[in-house]
Length: 428
Length: 207
Image (tube, each protein chain N blue to C red):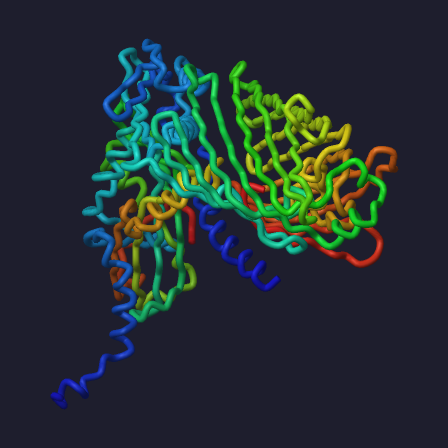
């Protein structure tokens, strides 16, 4: 706990200056916001494209559409900053600057984005980390080399938050973000993990409590190979199709290696709209994992999961409602089971108290209100097994959130003593 | 050892003065400051200070908005005891068609447009004032003017969807502190209100 408070202090002291100096720019404060954008030019290392007239494929079609949408409208300098960030991300550039120049027509301006590339395109990143007082540390570190549209990633992970078990090991990934067209991406991922189990999970599985017949036994190692193709159907809608080949080495010596091979499909939709005062974001997703003998799987199951999120941003206030649910049919391995009582679902609860080896049904709703960096949230939901009653649980919490970083304390709502969970992390 | 050198002590006041001067080393001088008192507020002028030049001017001419942070400080003595301090925020942009400057004074949202560079600089300084209420007319005081461009750290380059980029973090922290910032500082004293030229009261925000 002492380490957690130390981490909180470090994170808090790091967040504060950014919070004080950052902020969205009022479009009225730049005198050029009264002019109309005539054209937008994007310049890179030895190339240049005029979005009003050229139709090359230097920039992905979605981003190109968004940048082109500036043309004919009044200049919005904060929007230029957003699009500059998007260009920097797409080109993995060191920096993207923008200039506003006089246009050819009176009262019009030309916007020029200049992309400055990194000398070497290799990056080491920490995609996520978390400390939760009831489950310890989780985190990932990755190194990615990018050559053209190809990314090669090697990483290490230890996660005690997402699944029933804590998994620790390595991952390797190849990703092509342009398979003939920027609307098709290809990804191969390999993971190899060692698994550690909580005592409550071991006891429940050993005693054969109801629900154990619908899942696997405890395994000590797990390997996964996952080829996936992502189709950008329309810019807000993507469809991922692939397969997951998982191998699990059971704990008991001499036991055979189990295979859990499944077709994987995921449909995602994202949309946003904004006016002078409000911004609304909608995101929705549906995924299906189908374990089948056709792929040589020892487990035949179906895992369906949906989630939807609505976010309303008005000045410093952000309201978010996120709902998700899912169900498993057949006999699915433990890593496919639903868990709540972690850093995102029923925050504050001890997951092993809710269900020591997860459930095959879940329903959850989270309401979150933020004012600046201050955040309050209310989670409600249930995890249960088919044929058993669903027990609704609730939790509340307060915290600080800035960008991807958060610091929170969450309380399970129940009778008796308050047993809060302390959370600090990023991207969870 | 030379006994004369060994017994030469650096006084506490010298250390304090040296400490006050350290932050000024990376800043440019504002040139001579002149003052006026309207009965409530102390006004400052710095005719040799041209902050709409160099890098800030280049950014403005590229259509960006440049924020300047100013701070007026009155010291009770030459040892750096602060009596009153007044920070202010000046948001400047440059009209690419009219080639004129526009300024918004942060605290009051007062706005002025279509100014030349020197007129904009003068407007900014003439609207900076610090309350001298409570100060005896013959009490000596010292004054400091600080002006710098705001440099919000570009966190988006470090933290994005793929998490914290260690390379970007190294790049951010290996930058020389203040390398992207322009700053100017002027210091004057001792001054006395009774010796300052009197002007009629202007509409400004008091510190």
